[in-house]
Picture 1 (cartoon, each protein chain N blue to C red):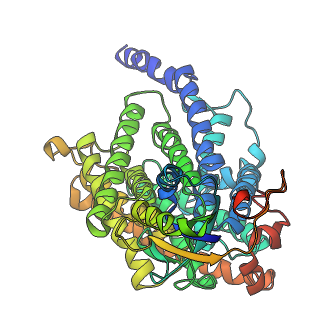
Picture 2 (tube, one colour):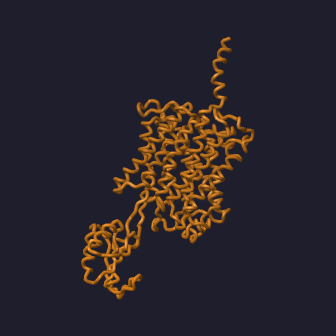
Length: 426
Length: 112
């Protein structure tokens, strides 16, 4: 009888877990649209404004095309390899082409096609972010080939490690919305791509001024709004977790923006528009892995550190190392992702007073233990992404007979030489 | 007759136009131009990267006046366009051989 009562007591929770929740579904439908909005049009405009007018269409074309290709890869086997059971390293092909998934299939409290779509938008924006590393000089064929192969060989495994029940998930690694899966992988790949493809002609001597900061500011605003779906949606439910993730995301973005602005004001005498929006993106990228584990006071610290550290890393890479990561993907997204993943391990602790979060992941019971896991995750993702990206770039270079456009084509601009179009006919 | 060509900072255009109207300058031609003088352009900062903008945006004003009015026009432009900062611009004066008002056929100083 006692056993029967226990079973009966469990029934509501069991049935809840296996039932679609319309509230959750509504929010994730919204979040999916918001995250896609980050790439199309947010990132498109953000990047397009930062390049010279002769390359505006090429960057738009690259982001847009990657979104299309990534969607098909996600359908064919991407979703299955990332979230299928498989092993600790990679999923399996059990859900290739969404085999066996219907509109009635569930993933938690969501229709599985919706979970598929939501995760697909992350698989779209990650390779699109890399475009900033090699903007204004890579062949379009190389871009498509590299990003497709990179999605399969880098994004899918790392996504499985962290979110698909892989080895990092087993260790209790904390990455709420993609600091590791999205930002570290994209940032490192952009850095490696910039090193392999080398600097743009005239880098450091010729003027490479962003051609339309109004466009960049508009795109940045779309990113900020879209990020609510990115982080708030990663709660995969319409509940307090989502609300708090959205709140800390907003606080960190605002703090990052103001921090970067103040540093520029002190250092260069004037606060710039590009500075304030870059600080915002740094704040967003940095809070992302921590967004479901920390409170608003910690978000303030995270945003502050994001503004300071990403600012100095940008200057270090540009001015000291002279690496032409054209649109600063690594110092903003990569460093932000690393910093946020690390800080999540600290501020998740419940014992930091007003700066406390919601507890450690897995079996970890102290900041030291959690940080160890976070650092293993950061190191493994960094190293794996760097090595595979490097090899891929070399192979793609062989297939497309040189990964870079000809010097004359680069000087003339990729809009005309790669796409036979002009951005502006004024 | 003389042609006065003044290269000034764009934001000074309205002020210069008003001041010239007050001393009875009846017409001018204005062009947006780019160039540089001794300052050799200026620096712009984008995420910590310094870029030299070699050609600075300027406004060119061209006015044709009777020879005796040249000094007062020059004084007016100098007094209104001056900011005491680098890049305030230059004024060039050149002789004009003939002026014709197309509508009436008037020539010389009558056509100014």
